[in-house]
Image 1 (tube, rainbow, N blue to C red):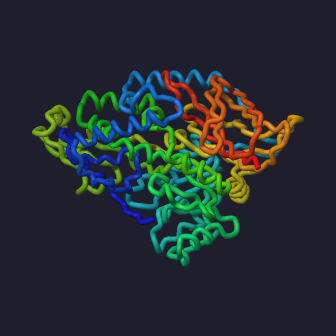
Image 2 (cartoon, rainbow, N blue to C red; image 1 turned 90 degrees about the vertical axis):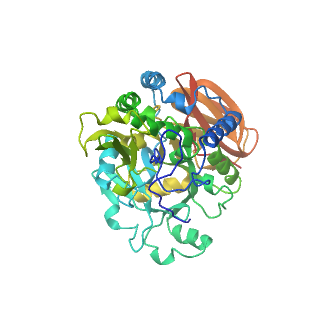
Length: 484
């Protein structure tokens, strides 16, 4: 994949021109329209996106992304999350397995637009109960992303080195710097040699990419939710230069950091469609992409009595945007009583801890070491969960025979036989959707247990949704059971 590191997105807006809108994204891509979009076109783009989502999402949404950002809605969502915690009851994993919370597609100290450090990442992993981080360093030759200093246990957190490169998350077993420019099929084969793994990344950019030879693909990526909702991001950043809205935003981030970060999280249909089509061809492990950089720390500071500067902590000084009282009258209130260089506000939207809680990949493995996690991921013994909504640890999706014995788990193949059933156990009651080849074949509401008698072969996966503030939001995506 061509790597274009863009520190800023340049958006035209009639109220706040040229603001750095990197919010809740990794700051890597140009917009297809070059961001030379009128406000009218941006609104039309949002409306089309909303209409398409409404027509394709399995469960209808109640609130827009902008509405979710209001203090009232954030408080209501948070209240429901707290209530769900009191209902949680988890079953143990399959014998011999432990449910490890893992992070894939994570960046630290690997580019100028990455704000977080490895030490910070490890500390936040411990804070949020993350067991392992599979790094995805941006490829920066001659630096080797398989650096042994970024591998192994660090303060109880397992690090596995890798790279986001050529449209993949690549986790080879050893250095492959001499093979980075080979053809795509040869690159895939190089990465997957021995116990290496490779996952297709940013699916929206490569819907037609071959899945041949792949370990799997991302089935959710937080960055995609941000990319398809530029209008609300404009509104979010505009709050930085309105004193009242800024106060509300600071309050929201302080009281409801997870809910703020998740306001754009939506059903990843583009990703799931690719996965469902791909698993008809071969076994593919679905993983979550955090795409975390800790680079969404917005700062407003005084330039002079009539001007403020707005930027992020990863922006070079010459890229900060100047806003004057002529353009935004509220600037006068923000600079009053302050001198040049004073920080008016600093709003951190994406600390690693928040990103880690937002989504993770639960891996069912024998123990916490690199060989065990690699084996489990290659086998598909994993599920994706938005754990900020509810800790999904203990989720199980399995096939049982006529005698009730478990004969297959996530990622496994099983032969269709009389009395074969799919079963699920969840730590919280949820809305459940059983999907076969991209089509819903069964659904149940308010269930923490589920079973489905099998009458035909196919690739089956389970979705679980939780109701927050009156709307169902996707929570868990299982890896499939392959019924042959």
